[in-house]
Image (cartoon, rainbow, N blue to C red; front, side, top):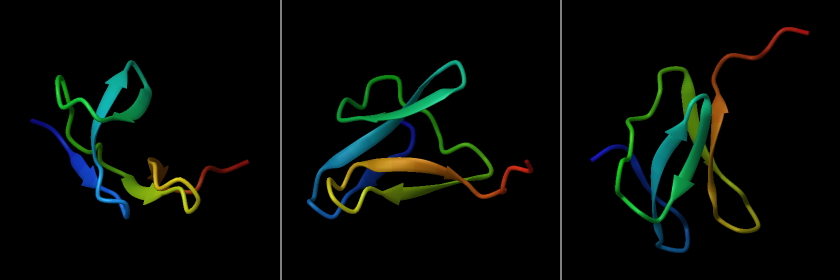
Length: 59
């Protein structure tokens, strides 16, 4: 089934990917598991889930 996240508004989103692009959708079809090294955060204004890397990128 893959990774799902219920946001503050009560909507459930499922994690998907296309290559290295990760995105959340309301459709559970073809969902993936949460990749290692990432956390899920929510947009404070809209409640949409996003992935955030646990490792800070070096400049």
